[in-house]
Length: 214
Image (cartoon, rainbow, N blue to C red):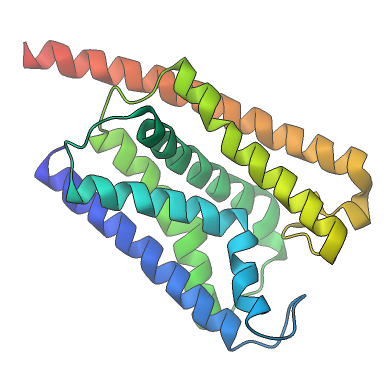
């Protein structure tokens, strides 16, 4: 990864940190929402796919910024792909399905912009422009599916006990399991399409880079 790539990665990680810190502060000082009191209100922030995808992206880009030539273990390669794919899904699903329902003001609007728009754009553009390349293949794609499935299982099981669902399209109490699973299937198709596209693009960019270096 080039010096410019490391700087981009560091800035992307900083956007994630700022966005999450602002969101936690807004939540801690707010009075609306499913959980009326702290610390439950603050802890519940981490149940959102948006926050978790930002954490995946932020953690991996900061690791690359600190150590760009780090060993490409299968775990890190999977987490790196997850960070890019999940943040892309976050941005797409929010702007397509959730943005019309949003009505944020003040610092809440700032956090919303950072976590749903700025970090998806920075994360995907950073991956396209700076890589590093050669970190994904079909086996890594298979492993990358594990995290979204775990998040969905956690969300549905937790929802049964506490009655909270972070997004309308996974709200079993309103839509029932059939509709929710269909909604999740559509998101899964999007995720797999992005994964396939990312793997294809990565291979082409890797070959192009190799041919230029010869």
